Amino acid sequence: MTNTHVVDRRLNGRNKSAVNRQRFLRRYREHIKKAVTEAVNKRSITDIDRGESVSIPGKDISEPVFRNGRGGRRSNVHPGNREFVTGDTIARPPGGGGGGGAGQGKASNQGEGIDEFVFQISQDEFLDFMFEDLALPNLIRKQLKDTLSYKYVRAGYTNQGTPAKINIVRSMRGAYARRLALTGNRRKRIAELEAELEALKKQPEHPDPALSPAARIKELEEEIERLRNRVKRVPYIDEIDIRYNQHLRQPQPATAAVMFCLMDVSGSMSQNHKDIAKRFFILLYLFLKRNYQKIDVVFIRHHTSAKEVDEQEFFYSRETGGTIVSSALKLMKEVMDARYPTADWNIYAAQASDGDNWNDDSPRCSKMLAEDILPKTQFYSYIEITPHEHQMLWHEYEKLLTPFKDRFAMQQIVDAGDIFPVFRKLFQKQGEHG
Image 1 (cartoon, rainbow, N blue to C red):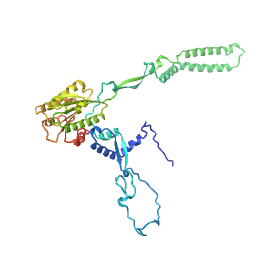
Image 2 (spheres, one colour):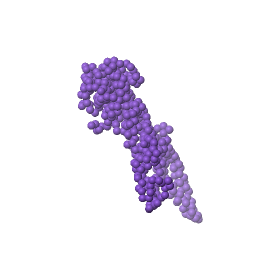
Image 3 (tube, rainbow, N blue to C red):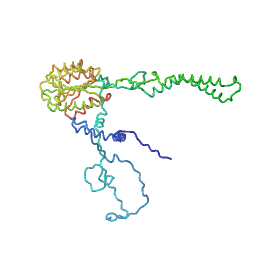
Image 4 (cartoon, rainbow, N blue to C red):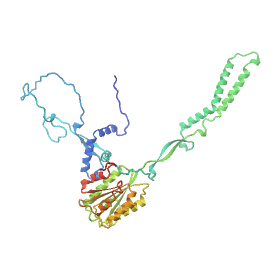
């Protein structure tokens, strides 16, 4: 019986152990997932998109090993023995092993152990494990007008084109086939005449000129020459033989999204409220980056009036005032109509507020969402950052949950520890809602 060895020689570029690494990640998935979850709880959201060190106890990476035992009865003399005599039974060490061991983290004066195995997962691997059980609802691939979403693909051959696209092999093959088709019968006739001519030349000379083959030989030679000239007049390559590589401009499936971030910066929003809102927006942006090739982000901050700002001003401006939430929704609708047509963009929005609003303005907000914004968005999430009872804005928004259950969701956040659980509830995969 011969042994078969399978050697994986697939090229992996610079990461020569990519295949083994993926196998390792699958095998110790539970350990890695646990480490990622702990890292999410410990880190700041702004520091969420880097790798992580994962520790695996040595006992979990050990492999079973078979060894040959010595067998039989043995008598050994151990020098320095002052505790045991013949017939005594030696107790098993505590814990079933030699003491010390995997990752106990304290000194020991007995036995040996194995350190925990520590390895680093990359940024992409970290985010993959972090977001693996989440999925954006209503994820629709829409064609992007940008020319970068198109590429040229091979589409056979054509009779017209530029010299740079000539397919030489295909052209020569066509020319050869054409010559065979046009000269096949003549070549066959030439072969027959040459065979007859060769046979006549082998015949002996006849004394009677009337019976001599000379006349027939001359006739055959003239006919062969005439047929060969006709064959030579067939061109080696003709214009009809030339084939060009054809490439078609094919649209690529492209995903484009715009993310609207609406944040209340009124006087009732404390710095802690704003910090929680900022972290939620950053987490949402990281999630969108995992699902879309192109993302635009629109920052809208509001108090009594709304303003579109850049990221720096959105997160760090100290401007404050009263609260009119509808001003932000009105500005969002204007930006959507002007720059982000629904035919080309997947529109997502997240609104963060403490729920404080003028009572007369809350019904207006609900109406604007139902008529002008939600029909055009893929998903709209509202987070209310407050430990207190819900106010008028929350109750008005609750009326939208039933008619827009597939594209509208709302959750409450009390402190920073609620950010990720709330995020998971908002963006869990379809069919997992409890």
